[in-house]
Image (spheres, one colour):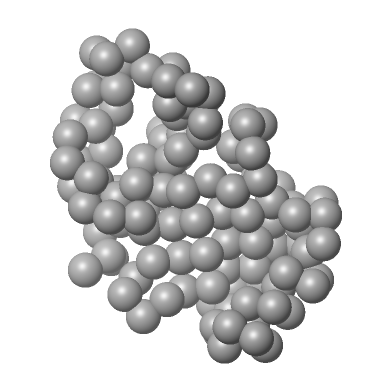
Length: 123
């Protein structure tokens, strides 16, 4: 597996509106998608920042070990998943996604949750 970068960061917060407004109004980021307690900010390089409020539907286990999760961009998610399994790394749930964007959560050796991401639209 070769990690090409950080493609995604997810933040779970009890202060959804203030966090959403901070990234939009102070950091100058434009929301690509908003739905209730959930906002996706797309960055010019193809990366994403997602804010999850208390009512957002986040994947089970995603924020179990912390309020911030980073997605590691890989070229072939199935190959990377196989390498994680071979190394004895615990996967969380099943691979999810579609339309060129796939993700798989896993626990690093210290229990920190990360996400593998394959994104056909990422440069």
